Image (cartoon, rainbow, N blue to C red; front, side, top):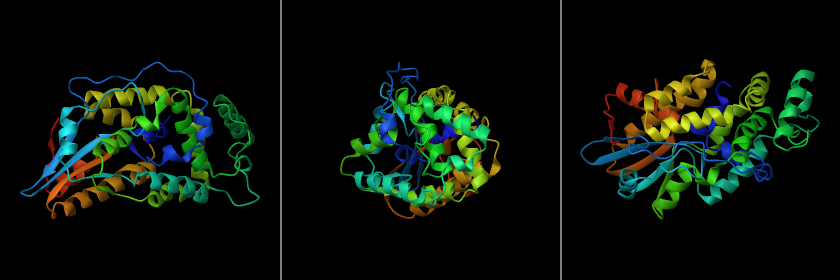
Length: 304
């Protein structure tokens, strides 16, 4: 199912706010199929100099409630930090604004419908996918294919027990209390990654979600299991399966990783301790944030 299943783990947390909440409410009871915490737990890294420490923690943006991962090492790093930084602003006000932004940039021009952009064969497969999640054929007619694709990559997970409210960022922010919050990107930037895709690419993106709907939970279960085990190498291997579109990989992962490495490099010039939480796929495999930091001569140490 190529790269779409990986969005919820490694790419864009805004995808969790882009869907129709009414569809998510139509979920079924699900057994806890994802792995629970091991002694090792999710990986945590740090970058430090004489007066600055920056923790790097890979997150999963949506998780089953049953998955346990918050341990003493992560808690100590978070509580000992002066601030927490996520990919995009994730306070309540920002989430509300994100819903509105999704509907603003994700709407098709008046007089155009999503299904009018599909071939008859694509339309049949697309409408069958909507039926699987209990949505009428016209449910997403007003929105662009990329936004429908994001929605169809997340809603099936939510209907099978995955919960954005159990996502790692939500938990970390709750435990961080009144600590100052920062962000590496804006929601506008993340939406723009998809909105700038040509129409043909957007439709292909949507149809990947349609074709992979039955596989998305199995894929994410595998990724969560590797994440909970703290096995960054195996996580990277799963991430790279089907990531065969260089342009998508560059836009979703590699360029952003390079940007974040630059941010970390500059942040080291300021004293203090920062806890940075980003999608786990950005901290695994080739061209990870750690790789770009190494190119700058910055040492990254694994804490756990």
